[in-house]
Image 1 (cartoon, helix red, strand yellow):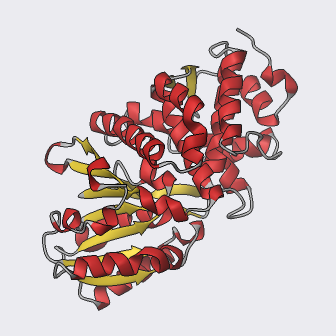
Image 2 (tube, helix red, strand yellow; image 1 turned 90 degrees about the vertical axis):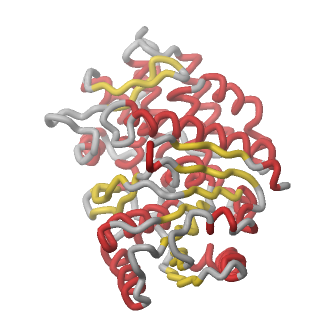
Length: 371
């Protein structure tokens, strides 16, 4: 893709505003990164898989502009979102005498982005960082908005900080090396945006999903840019999730329970979110909000994206136990993001426990409309 095909989305947060550049070939435009540096020194945090593909190229491009690079390579996988891996990053930063003006660069998917962002938030009480997401899920969701975190043994993303990057550089060419399963996992978050806020985008996905799956540049760039536009609007209005930003968690309370209840790594985050969105749709149907035809549209699109739509059979009691550790719980009450219609989501604690349990059990009567 030519440089002029790049799209730019602005996240408006006053003095902490920043740009998201989206398009092909951006790793070959180091000047975009250099323009955000406060000193010509960066620490690039990545994993072996992404590092083998892109670290050398990025390091050489920055070196050509006289930027000193400290590479920090940590193991791959969700299990690395831990204090142990975070301390490995701190050990490297300290051993290389990284300063408050040294910029951290996250080169990788959501795990690397979350780790790097949290490290930046707390190292020397805050250093600048840049996101270079290399997976679809990271490009459309986790790299944007300043949510950083590591996992706890009892729950996902419970320890972290809101800390905004200086820049997000989403090079869509990196999606060419992404495994098909990872691409589909990212599509779960893409579909989510249409469900919560943009029915026209949901309809566009229904018409263009195969082009995105085939990684056609125009379709991929449009999908990533639209998701970033929607997230930028929400983050600009509610940076710290006191209201509207919680809608971005459609499917996530269910999804995090699936991830926590299954064997580590058995489910990708996007796969669990896909099932979570279907469960949220089913519960919305139980409440008489969403018609059967709309639920079937939701299920059909996730299936076309090669994503699961059936939850693992943990049983309602186990699901409720796992969902009891959730950031949206308030005054001891579980709150869920549900759908009034495709394109309109809301956060509520007002749902019948029996309806929730029917949906969690996957019972046939949970699929019948009560509206």
